[in-house]
Length: 172
Length: 172
Image 1 (tube, rainbow over the protein chains, first blue to last red):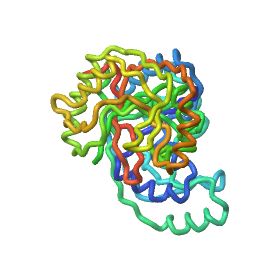
Image 2 (image 1 turned 45 degrees about the horizontal axis):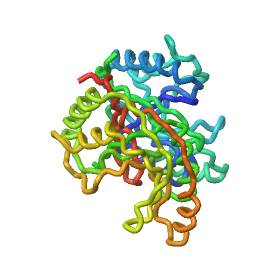
Image 3 (image 1 turned 180 degrees about the horizontal axis):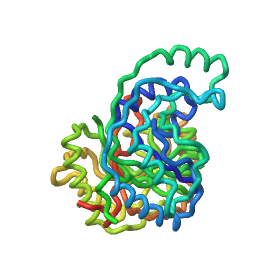
């Protein structure tokens, strides 16, 4: 089964992201707006059981922190994904790094660019239009991060939450 | 904000349910296949914070149990919803009843019929076709229930998980 780890921002930020995703992101219906902490990895149930314990420790060792979003950015020319850029706060980077340590699989292939995807798999023209109109826009979103979620993928590509991990609140 | 409480069955059961939902359920993209434990209710963040504590107590007082699905059924003629009928095990009924007690809002208007919706809002003709072909089918699904989830609804109607509550594992 395929698992992944993500942070869901507040309803306000999710609603804002969805106003774009609805039109520009074919993954709109597969998962709520999110910050990926750990890319999809394969694991069986027994292994995930061990990961859950590890993730509880990580959650308990993390203090709630705030993140800010002030603009969109893009992964172009690698892919024409457009995203809400989450400013790379140290606490967020620390959390990301913990997701590849200990028993957890070290499957991270790219540098961590914290983001909430709002558009992907657009044609070149669509991309230029959308990015052109969004790149000048200022956002002023602030969000408290106090948990992350372990999800698994269904056959249809959608993701279901397996466990939530609230900072400082997990029983190990 | 609108909240609700649900059990997500295993991936196997969700995949089975989605094979029907994809064609017959307009809520397919809004939430994974689920057993509703508590219908949508309004609450502010502070109140939900108190509910979370209550829900942790409920989770800690509940032992994992199995549920079985052997056939589909329908809410017709009230609505033409078709669902996988979850056999009403005592542990499940007990859990449902706890969802309307204590600090939790008593918003339950109907008798508890544990189910996983697979078709709804069909035309009368579609309903007859789908139910006609599914009502003779035998299912043999068994699932372990060891957690439930508190969800909140976004402006687009989709649901995001706020917290998972694992039986016997919550820190209060």
